[in-house]
Image 1 (cartoon, rainbow, N blue to C red):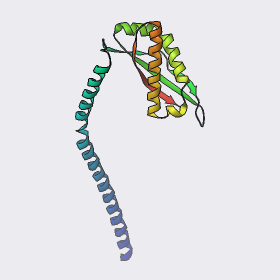
Image 2 (cartoon, rainbow, N blue to C red):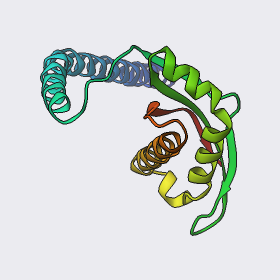
Image 3 (tube, helix red, strand yellow):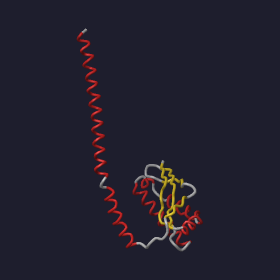
Image 4 (cartoon, rainbow, N blue to C red):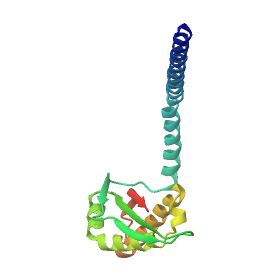
Length: 173
């Protein structure tokens, strides 16, 4: 009977050692992760500030000065469409907001919503599902949409109205 009691004590002690080792490992990993984010996170704002200065210096030299504050125009409904892919067709839903500069451009964008929606729908429906899976493909789609919108608005209004196309929702099934 004494041997049986000794076995129970040994099993309990080994379980306790295993639990303490697991807890110690989790705590050690947590401390290591916190130290990494603490030390690596402190350098990012300085690097971002330097990058912002470089971008600002290059943008002001190559592009005209944009007047007016940024205003966001939300399109009334999301775009829902099918796109072809290599393996299968997919359904995509995209919510879009347009960034314009100044109240005059906002009024022009709101006045020409049907033209904007038609242009965006033609750009979106020409996309390929395999390209839209990657972030690069989504960026290319936004850039193509911006160029086509600026061209369409330039033909109708005579000026560049839309400064940026922003995807505020993107679902692909």
